[in-house]
Image 1 (cartoon, rainbow, N blue to C red):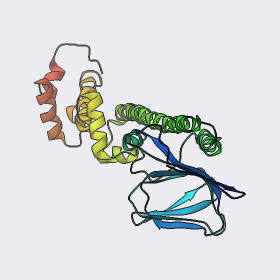
Image 2: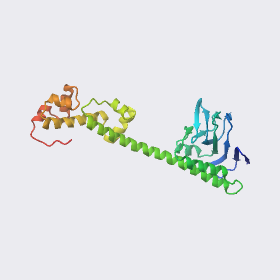
Image 3: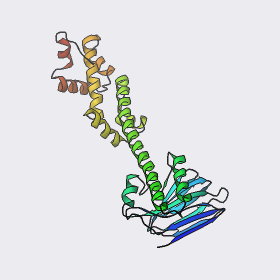
Image 4: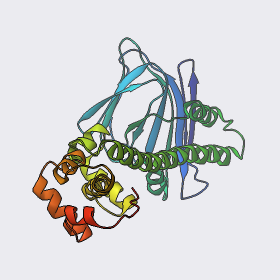
Length: 285
């Protein structure tokens, strides 16, 4: 069990081996204003470490990938993985860091969506840096300091969890909204040559993902919905627009006349001409 604290105008570190709980404990924390090209590593740690950049930029190398890290970014160093990082030669970075370990760390980081997210930018950067400062500047001489620092670390993780939840909620809202936008587009452009691939590109979404979210919301596939809209519109044209069957097929987006006849009869058990000859009925879109 040991404690080390060192301070100078450009560097501060506190190393602590006291654990107040086995689930999560702070191993070290600190702050540094680095010189140009200042580097650390290659090294392998046995605990997790998060850096938050308050100024400048630098570079972080892990798993054969090098990341540029800028002011407002964080980078996560996991245990057991070789890594190397260094300050930019023209705009060297300044950062706070906190190192931690414990039985629940992996679960906590997973809930924050950080396990494999080595470089990230928190949305609430000002709040994050304030917490990092409080951890680094906490009066280590007080008996309750370990508990206070640990509470700040839990607060930090609560911010990350909250940001992840918001992103997930925003994603769900976006998916609902995009389905609504696609429905409106089809309703307004059913006569044009609508293809699922083109819709996916137009709305900036993967085709397979679009298929899943559309079917989950509407109960039918996107292609089936396009056909349903065209058939519904064709009934209105057949009853009220005084057009030939072939003209109706063209006006409602059926480029293949034979396919229109086949699809219409399969849906309504009548040919278009038989449908036109039926007594008056109200046709709803």
